[in-house]
Image 1 (cartoon, helix red, strand yellow):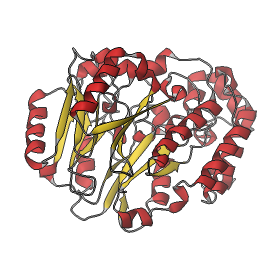
Image 2 (tube, one colour):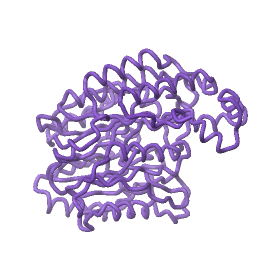
Image 3 (cartoon, one colour):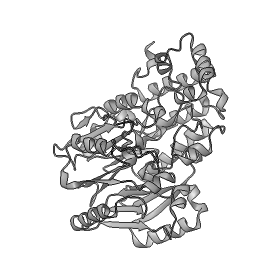
Image 4 (cartoon, helix red, strand yellow):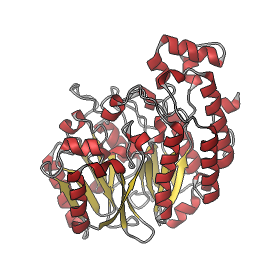
Amino acid sequence: MPEVNFDGLIGPTHNYSGLSDGNIASKKNFSSPSYPKKAALQGIKKAEILINSGLQQGFFLPHERPFLPGLKQLGFIGSNEEILKSAYKFSKVLLSNFTSASSMWAANAATISPSFDTKDKKVHITPANLKSMFHRSIETEFTHKQCKLIFEENCFKVHEPALSISGKGDEGAANHLRISRSHNEKGFEIFVYGDSGFSRNNTSIKRQALEVSKSIANNHNLDVENTFFLQQNSEAIEKGSFHNDIVSLSNENIFIAHEKAFQNKDELAKLLKTLESKIDNFQYIEISDSEVPLNCIIDSYLLNSQLSTNGQNEMMLVLPEEVQSYKNCMAWLDKLKQISDVKLFDFVNIKQSMMNGGGPACLRLKVILDNDEIKKLNQKFLMNSEKLDSIKSLIEREYRDILHPDDLPDPNLLDESRRVLDELTQIFDVGSIYEFQKL
């Protein structure tokens, strides 16, 4: 199968610090206690659904958190304990930013263009700069390092992260769609942006800049005729759709969107006309506001679900179990089964991620490859039963059951986190890739 999913392995500092402006769930659950062990096991169970469906599954390793090198750059000195406690005393928010486990949402790790779409027939990867949120922007360097390790052969081209413009950056696959007749045919890539990087309209936080999207498309060597740019609907952003993957999704020939997903209806109509003329099995399915109101789409995370083609070449949709509480969403899913190629549905408990505003689609980065490219991936990052068992055993043994907001400066949390990361590098057999391992 040409689809490989890389999930973000949830780290031991998973917490609710409300750092993500525009993310309703993140703000709503600010300062609630978190459950790191439960979060990590829920993430793995979600990934196992894909494995059991016949798909290849990989993981990105968690980032080093709390990130002491960043605190040292800001002038905090002394022992590890002194640095953590002085940073916490200076600013709880500052320490929270350097302790965030937000790299778990791998949809923001990078933008991927398959070799089927690129002129040089290479797979192009651009790690996201995530410049609009500080706690996420500090992920870029380590994400880039992991991408270079995973996609190390000549058939892959890993770019440097894009420049940001006036604080507007690049949010990765969460603002990127691909539509094709099938995975292994040339497709159409759609970059979804919030606004121009030079716009001075600050009524809402628009994270993706048009100019940055265009630079990635250019660097990925895409055909202009097969590349489109759609603007996010400002109302959707204001109501909590901080990424486009909350209000639209795609897989192969299927494109699903809420009627308020995109700003410019004329641009959308132009795109749909092209897709209908070029892809003979294309299906565009729009959810009207009368069927499922925008607020309900955002609250339920109905469209932040993981749509994939399984090992039996069937369309399957993995949804957060919260969707089952919304009668109008369930009615729409019944309709979807009747009118589309999507026939299989699986509901998964990822409540710990959902409480921070991340559904199934947020937890993974989809990569479309041919069979030869899959063989050329760094197999150390791909899962098998032995590796998964080792990871689950580590989580059960080392992760905290509960983490309170005032636990973040605890030096024991730092020691626990480092033990976890050190053992993960042994399970993955990738050597010393963390800063603390080089001390």
